[in-house]
Image 1 (cartoon, rainbow, N blue to C red):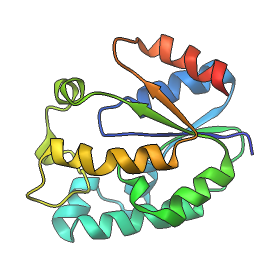
Image 2: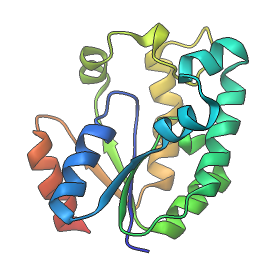
Image 3: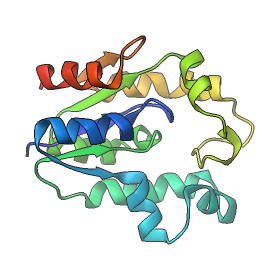
Image 4: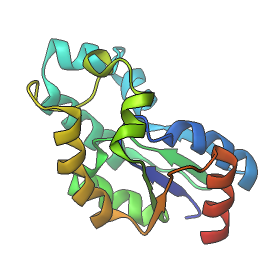
Length: 163
């Protein structure tokens, strides 16, 4: 399979970079957060509000396990890395690229943390969430891209050279 999957925190630019990467590499683009919302007919935040963040992670795992794409850029939800089975399925589809963005940059990009539909414990801060997930992102990544001070176009170029 000739897919490239993007992982990283909310605000890392997975969807933004994903669309540009798809154009640059003549691939299609899919965002698993949108697949979840289509499947459930609810926003991510509504799923959390109506059930809880654990249920959102379970739904996300089911969506990851159902992916059957070829020649796509796959932008995942930030919590995809909580599913070992889901990440194994992604890795079978092609390389996994971690977009590593520093906390201060993420905070500048995320203005609606409480309403964004982020699968996290209700009392967990964004900084604590980053610390918790960072180890998992590194564990599953085939390539780690440090995004500091790079434009989307520069990141697309770096990724295309790697793959």
